[in-house]
Length: 309
Ligand code: ATP
Image 1: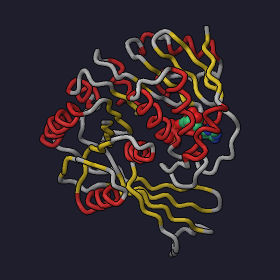
Image 2 (image 1 turned 90 degrees about the vertical axis):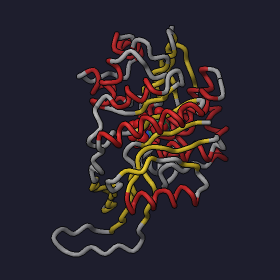
Image 3 (image 1 turned 135 degrees about the vertical axis):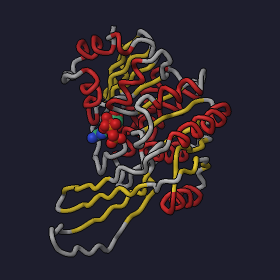
């Protein structure tokens, strides 16, 4: 079983508008509302892959109930810890080819809720083969909360996709995730400088002491594919050009593909191909977290994995 963790889920609302007018009324005809948050995107992709998956995290209030209903409708198993705060809305206004976002920061978690979650998580983790942690931590949780969760679920493998201070905090601790998937911007954030899309530079960067002890590092590079390190092996992943409809959430789809492939014990080449195929399939669809698996094999066969000596 794969356990996915979303600590700060949301109801994602999209408002398509022909023109967005400030300081007056904007009326919206086609509103789309979905259960969101990076971990739930990962969950939806895993469900489409027919993986056995349970979604967990923190959920509260009326919108928390809506998320549970949405997951029930799509037959996704879930076991969230209820909290007293209200789960957030995240609004995307799509107008004139642009996207204006209004993101609520979400509930503030109390110390009691934090320790109750660690207990709840520990029980679920004991039943899982692999666990993914995705996205930001809600307010109130200490910045090393993912490290605390890593301690609790030892020795279960964890795929971690987060950024900024939460990721830096994990890298400083002794208990390591099995895989991290920074994109180039997140990698630059960790290093405090930009990184060239150059194999020698990427090899040197991923060999830096801050990454010691992490088995897999997959740097996703959007339309340029990925660069990866597995133990002491380095791989350049070259992907074909595709028609992109909406690349939002492609990183989450990649995390789903990598996680399922690792759970299945696939080869390095197959793990990297599956991760990239799912990112590409997500980018080819309008709906985040939705993929058309009919195109899986065609893309899989066009990906080139080169081991860098
Ligand atoms: P997000 O934060 O939106 O989930 P991300 O920045 O974490 O995304 P990306 O590097 O953009 O992740 O995308 C993950 C993978 O999806 C890429 O490695 C690639 O395989 C595929 N992908 C993403 N964007 C494109 C694109 N424009 N063309 C082809 N493939 C893409």
